[in-house]
Amino acid sequence: MTDPIPKIRLRNLRKSFGPKVVLDGIDLDVMPGTSLVVIGGSGSGKSVLLKCIIGLIAPDSGSIEIDGRDITTLPYSEQTAARARIGMLFQAGALFDSLPVWENVVFGLLAQRKIARAQGREKAAEFLAQVGLAASVGDLSPAELSGGMQKRVALARAIAARPDILFFDEPTTGLDPIMGAVIDGLIVDCVKKLGSTAVAITHDMASARRIGDTAAMIHKGRIVWNGPAAHLMDSGNPEVDQFTHGRREGPIQMELRR
Image (cartoon, rainbow, N blue to C red; front, side, top):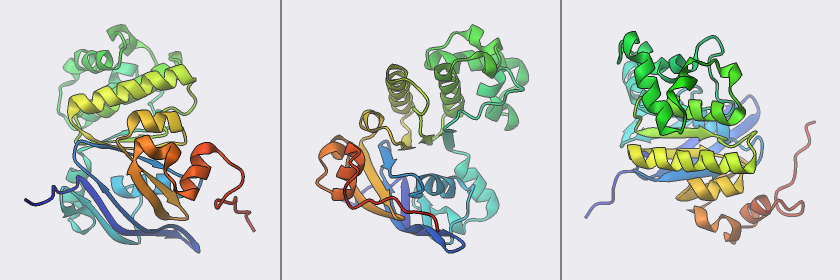
């Protein structure tokens, strides 16, 4: 019996900006239908890792496989098609201020002509309902929403195209602990309902344990630990233990800019 093919497989992924090495040979597998949480300090390379996978940044070397195909070697049109199956919840929501909520939610569907504009409000209402918002919210502007509501709308937009893969960039940043738990619960429910594979980056350890099946930590551009998210607080790895418990003393030292 052969092992299942990872939904996402990264091998020897490297990225530098001038002399600064950000990704220094990342190897990582994310199995289909599972949720991976990536943790690490500020500047450790978490966001650059996501941006390489979704195509906002080109890696210097290494492979990025989705369903067994290295998308870095594909023609541009096929890379675009592969990445069109990815949904993204950005850290700050990234809603379009000039558009009403309903149009934000179905923006991708309208842009790709998957639905007619006349269907937009009705479709948006369906996705808003999935994140616990009334259809009437669709007629508001993003500026009229609280931080938690903006996160819900951004999540509704991320799931609208029924993506195979969902990425979450610091999904609970700026939220109080209760609203953070609500958003995490919605994320888990939406991922399970879609049957998607999920990758989240976060500094929030409670969120990491709620969202993740597995977890990985990046330190100095490398994966220093990979294991069950339930063991983040008792991993036995000195870097992970220092980070998850917020200890000043340990192997991770803040680097000063020179």
